[in-house]
Structure formats: structure tokens, C-alpha cells
Image (cartoon, rainbow, N blue to C red):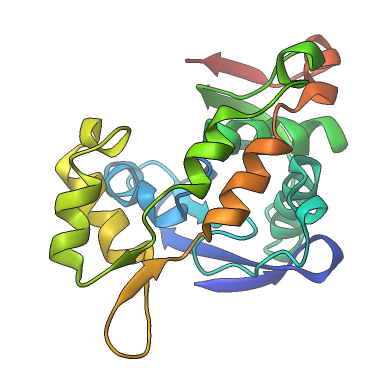
Length: 223
């Protein structure tokens, strides 16, 4: 793992899985972390140098001090900081899921030519009127259970509810192993605090990117 100084000094954690070939950045969905990609990274090491980024407030990256620090544009700047700090250059490949897909698109919007080929999965990029009202997922995030006795009980509860009940066992194992932090006394809590997850949903949408999406020059597979 490598810690990078991201936008406005927020520490951004990057998992470098190595591998042979060009760099491939993997960006996770809101509320999870970079290591959620480990089952995928294991399949790609023969073709790419695989790097998975913990978005601000997620995984082992730094926590934002206030709500506006979770603006998705900041995560685009964070990706650019990672690319610069690691000397990855331009014309990169990336894959992002949900909010992570928006972060990838934001980085390209902020610095054209950053990526040449991307896969955007369930990308949260849309018109302003779609995201002008309340964010239902923010309400869900604030009600989320965030304390667990142990990883076995955490896996049983998380794996019984959407969205994790649809995940592969390997992906759920990766989240339970790496997405929970140990507390004094032995209990576990979510590495992404409930309020930070809610702020991300409230500030999401990448509407600015949507308005200029046709101008982005990367080759995109949109899933």
C-alpha cells in the first residue's frame, strides 16, 4: 500500500498489486474500498499492473473534515494526484463502479488525456434535475448497522441484505476482511463511516461531467 497526498492534503491510499503490462486503475463504489477489487485483480495481473484506490473517507484513506470535502470533483483531483505521485503518465486504462466510475470520468474531465480506455460500470453521472432532490441512499446509509461483534457475524448480516447478498463469496470475503476496522474491546466498525457515505450520496451525480460527457475523448465501455 502507498499513501498519496490527495486534493487539499487528504491522504489517499493505493493498493499496488503489481502485474505485467500497462497500469490499470480500479475505483470502487461508494461505501466500500479498493480491496473489494481483489478477486478481479487476481485475474488481471498477467495483463496489467493493477492499482486499486481507496476513495477519500473509505478504506485506509484519510477522512474528510466536513461534508463538502466529499464532493466528487475532489475524488477526481485525488486520482490525478495518485497518477502524478506514482509517475503513471497519461493515456491510462481504468475501471470504475458506481461512484468510482464518476471519479474516473471526473479525472478525465479535469485533465483531458488522462485515460485512453475505461470501463464505467453503473456510473452515477447524470443531469442536475435527477439529483436535485433528496438522496434516498443517504437515508439508508445513516440507518446502516455499523458495529459488529466479529467478522463471522458481520459476514452473515451483510451477506443477507442488498446489495451484498448479490456479491460473489470472494468479493464479500474481501469486504469483510478489509472493510471493517478493529475497535478497542474487540468489536468491529465500518471503515467508511455512515455519515461520510451519506455525504457522498448527497453530493453525487457528477452533473458537471454529464454536461460535457460527449467531449471526453477516452474510449469507454459503459455497463
